[in-house]
Image: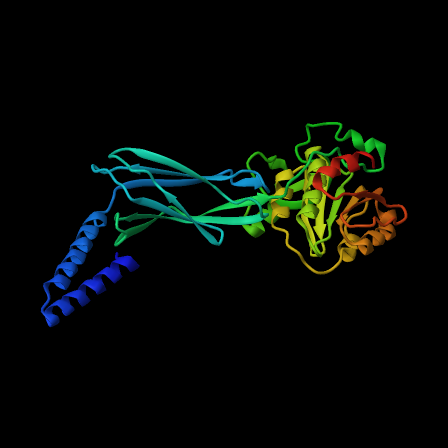
Length: 359
């Protein structure tokens, strides 16, 4: 197909032909002929359909905010002629990234990698990939799409923390037995069957009703639940990173974790740190306070509030009796001192481990 420059060359050549014949001058006709010949050569350059094997891989598909992620493009020439002038256009989020592919001799392959943006938390669509072959003058080009789109998930950053204190010393020892695959005797919820689940936990009535194999998820009632409440009003990346660090610390230690916002429960799991990070990667600012979800959530264990609002921190004192221990990770200036609430003020994520260890 002709590029804008190619269409302009064609239009200019036609005007020069017309001017040459009307005025009787040979020079415009010669110039017009040169333009037409250039177009013919350009079409001959790009008209053959190249035989290519093209793949693009995003690695890794999930990455903490700020860490490196790349797209790796592999192009192999399956034809009997060398190819040059190849250019790849990959859609990354709302922008287009252009990569020039080095010349491909016959049966040769080239690998080109380019960085992906990871400075903003959330889902970043990558693709579709378009491979463009253009002539040296830029008059014509052939465009083909290869493969489908991929999604890069940029997760919150985390720092290593000790297990959040529950206020009851015997809880800190964790499970006394590791032969219960999903807890002991307390029913928690129903979920879809995954490979490796104990078939004795299949709930046959629900499976028959839904048409999907469902299993009972059991939890150990002796283990304290860590409830992480994230204030999403005036949400900042530091707030999400702090909430993720606290929740992941408890999950990786094998404790039940519940993460909630003003919109409700975001994640409720036992030791699934990946689920927590995936859910927090997509959290967005929202109005409303945490009073309602905190009043209806199960009591006991630790409550950790992450907020920059002194009013939200003060409200925690009213919930002190429902939890064994209440901690506020405070991000604002002028740290409030609500009664019976342990304050952990931070200005950066790197300050959280030091503040946390002194609680």
